Length: 460
Image (cartoon, rainbow, N blue to C red):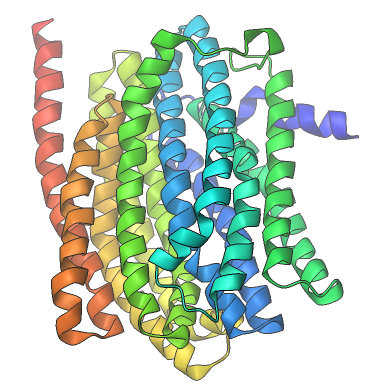
């Protein structure tokens, strides 16, 4: 039974032909399953917080929530490198370079495994020191450390899953990772409830459930890659790092990872300011972050669609089609972002109540959502502009823009503005200010890079 199911998942009809035919419907076919997949991943953490919030207590909920920004900071570097894998394989696919695809696939998986091992070692050594730097309250610290250490043990598994999913997406297949994650997500929720409610574990129970569910996703995707009939098929004899291909991946992936890290670093700095306002604010922020993430995944999926579609068409030499990709992605991303944010705001009270029914926590959570969703109007533009540049292989530009406009500005904001008002609203206001400036800078960069690429094509 399992063999039939896995073979069905890996059939070629899941792939989207990005270089021929209509675009809008194919962008939706690519982006929406990707958004749902990311939402399921977020449910891993949301389920952790909801279960401990209801069955353990506010301190455990704050402990799990306080780790999110730190985990994202470290993981995002390698997720950025996996985006480099996506772009390089997409360009090779457009150019019909099957040998390049094979080298990129195997090099990426080796890097994912080694990177995960390095993060595990780092996390086990420095967990407690980092949590103290983040000003995690003493009553929350032991629980936060326990959760973080177990999570770090699963880093090789988590990174392998992200690279495997990137390989499928480079071929236009976003449905396979979605189907696999649906299964593991259900297992994660069931394990959360079993380990906390039946075995009477606290944060260690939800951490173990998260690692186990990620292991299931990783193993299934690896088996699918082993059985794949195309050039992304994984073969044991090919497991090595190809220097030339890896340099291309790193040239795109490392700046992308740094850009993601800049967002996460600024969020860590903001989280330390949030921690100074007490456990109630920490718990409310953790709940709201989990809701707003669902809207972010929608806009981020269109950014990844822009990267992949641009990469394949650029590899195929179809620059006019790249222009259409940009326009469609920008329009669809903006529309879906507004719809998703509006829907979450409309149901904000009951949704926040899933995590904790305390009226004070719900009120603060709604306050955060309103400000953040206004900022997402600019974030949707940032994702498309960044995705377009990465699709052409220009990954350093959006990384530098994020370093200056996002990370730098938010550090200055928390250093100079927050002490003047010392309220939660004054912290969250850093998001729309920094993202609006970032969007403006990236728009200028997109115009200049596109003009250069299209003028070179005209000359040739």
